Structures are given as structure tokens and as C-alpha cells.
Length: 171
Image (cartoon, rainbow, N blue to C red; front, top):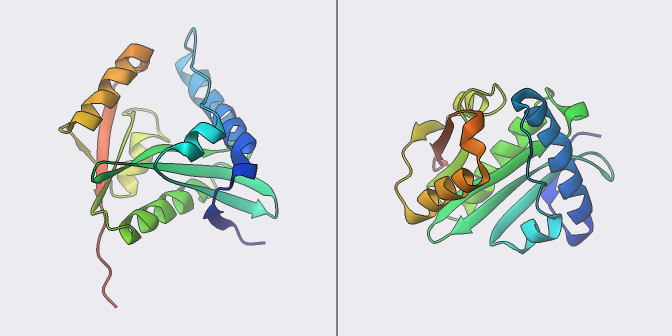
């Protein structure tokens, strides 16, 4: 079966949380923090304004997800997670591309995210996908910087905001 991307359903909630916690282990193994916040529940993610896409590699075998939140007139890639056993197969890029397409279909001209600058599967991955670093300018983006500081995420490396323009396709 070809990987299939679809919108997440409430029945996927437990797997969404599990996938994020599994993917975060790669990050925590690299950063070696004393503590790391647990992933929000899948139900919490599903309840936020926006959309959540999952990628199935076989019927019922969910390999990852992309969570995009919609705030004011912006869309923001809140989380992209792929199970470690499915990494380095292009599934994260497929999810990212699908999230960008859905955001464009909803009328957004740009999508933002926040990530670590020097983790290879963070900022360098997004840069290869056309994202560029930018300063947080909106109240929403500044609130993300504050939330990250409260969690202490910045002590493990430089955090950056990135954005990509969503091109209008011509028929």
C-alpha cells in the first residue's frame, strides 16, 4: 500500500500522542534534558482550531502526523512527528507538503513553525523544504517564544521561527 494521508479522527487520538512521545525520544536522546514535557493528548490536539493530518503506511498503521493550528489570520505547524522506525523514508516531507497544501486550500498565504536551529531533522529539514528563518512579529508568535522559555526549551539550543510562502498554483 502506498502511504495515505488523511485527516485524523477521534479514534486516532491515542496513537497521535504515542507517536509524538516516540518521536520526541530521538530529540531527548540528543539533547539529554533532565526533564521533557510529555506530548499533549491527541484529543487536545484535535480540539484546537486547525487540522491534523496522519499518514498511514498500511491500513491502520499510522506512521506520523502533522498538526496545524489556525490562529487569527495565520496558520502554524505546531507539530510534525514520525515514528522513529518510519523515519528517513520521506514520510515527514509528505506530511509537510500535505499540510502546506491544506493550508493553501484554506486561503493562507504563509505557514510558520518553531524549531531547533541545529538539530538536523529540525531547522535544516524545513530549510530544504523552503522555509526561511524570521523574527517573531505577531502577538501569537511572541507568545510561543514565551511558552518555550517557560518550558526551558531554549537551554538545549537555539530556537528559531521559520515560515514558508504558500504559492498559488496556476491551472
